[in-house]
Length: 137
Image (cartoon, rainbow, N blue to C red; front, side, top):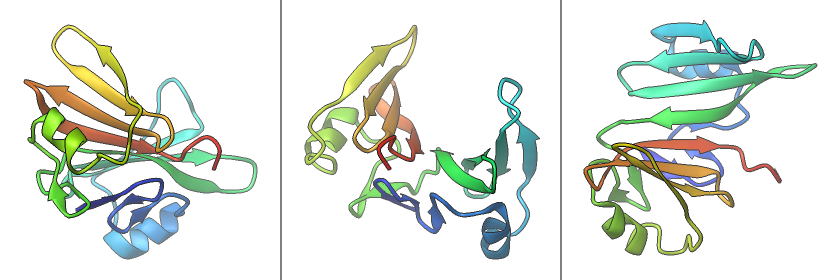
């Protein structure tokens, strides 16, 4: 599965409707509504290890956020999942210069606002990626 900055992961592309997702990938394993935001619909595809968030506005519902922990996750053709964070930042994501880090009890997140990309890191290795539509888009 390939990460496409500002666009999505593989054929899961920002701006897709739920109908387009179902047409391409079938029904999700889980459908739910965010407990804190009734305008956010969450779908889970277990085989892809991906969680999609659709946001409802006045006229339509569109894919706007993706969480993924697929072990085949790549960026620029290079494996990301379970790789050391420093290696990925220096090689696969060297064009991305500005990262904000947040340290929690047992994990760290690396966030880049230009690409709305978050790398979740535990044991110094990437164990998940979150992507959203950049605010200026």
